[in-house]
Amino acid sequence: MESFAFIRRASHKLQVIMRPSLDKMRRIKRNNEFIQETKYNHLSLAFWTCLQLESDLIAEMPLPPSGLLSYEDDMPHPNMSLLEGFDQRILDSYPGQLYLRTHLNSIHRMFYAPEDPAKPGKDKFRNVYVVSDAVSGMHWVAPSFAFREDDPPADDILAARLRAKYWGAQVITYRPFIRQILQFSDSLKNHASSPNFPSLSSEFRQDITAPAIHPKARTHGDIDPQVVELAKKGVTALIESTRAFHGLGDKRPIITNVFGTAHACVLPPTNCLHFKLTTF
Image 1 (cartoon, rainbow, N blue to C red):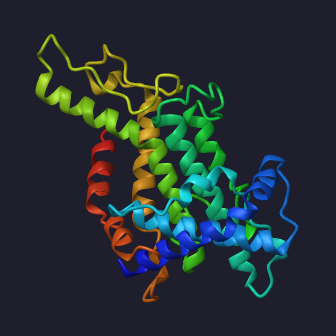
Image 2: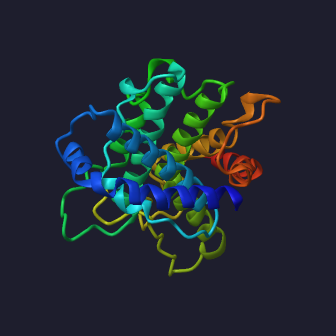
């Protein structure tokens, strides 16, 4: 709570400081330009740093936001080439964190949130495979941080944090398919002989293209193989997200929310899911 109090206070002060520069920042963002002036670059860096810290805490605890989030769509990313005095790995990892944050927001907005009637058709992600490909190609991160999905956990905190966020994004992408199979298995167990076999609910919006278990499916063999494959990817993502920090050894992890991260690293539920899906 003490950490959040400091972050929230900084976010309130930052909103006052950056208010005279908002029009300039909006123009830079709208024109897809790079920030060229140090003053605006410092504002952008402070904004994205405060927003990420605040969001990490609010995601795990019921805390009041500062209002900084309302400026997210207007704020360009910092120009890392203008920064001096930072280790190159820090400069390389920061844009990756911002990309994954934007990607996570896109998943929530495109898949789960109702479409904004004022902006019809604006969403670029309408297909589960397109969403997955947006990060799996590793084009979003510096070569020094690129990794294969079967690599062991990273042994330094910057890479570990990037991978944790990457796997978190994959969990959000694939979890609906895990849920479909678990719901279907429960229905088979409890309603197999009933003529009114329960219909499966979808987490996705209706305009999203994604494989689903057919309403007439009555055995595990009737499940679309694509659903099974995507569910397996989801289980892999769950497991990898829980062990993202396991490669740090005895090093103390530098993370925003210790309790939230510790909670996310509870492994038994994912092992249980892995066991269930190996039956397919």
